[in-house]
Amino acid sequence: GNVDRFAFSVLWEVTPEAEVVDVEFHKSIIHSIAALTYQQAQSLIDKPDKDCRDDIQAGAVKRLAVLARKFRERRIRAGALTLASPEVKFVLDSESLNPTDVQAYTLYEANALVEEFMLLANVTVSKKILRH
Image 1: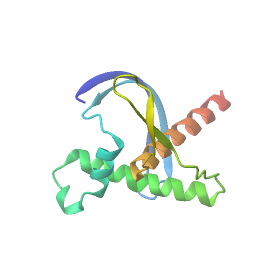
Image 2: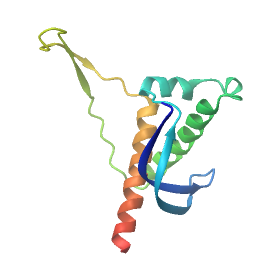
Image 3: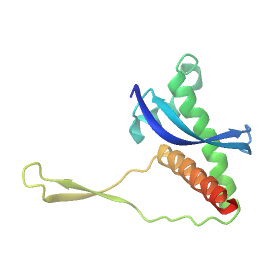
């Protein structure tokens, strides 16, 4: 966190109903205020609204989660494919790095949030490429 990174950014203007009303593409510098794990992001999503009034990070993640839910709902209504195969993770021996166990990978709403915005970015860029 708290790092500047060069990027190519897709900027969307989105209504509270998750309707994209404008799109811009820019070379940018992103100033990260945090590098969150999915579990950390989920704890911000789950944080009660009354506890988020002065927490910029939690407020931003919660707003993104609301939009992601609406994007996902719209995609599924439109017939999007949903895959329900469980993901697994391997536990490795610290010395040999050989697998010692297989466990189910816990998926959080935060995973779906990132997925929705990655999909939106991919679709937006694809449409831009198709037009040019």
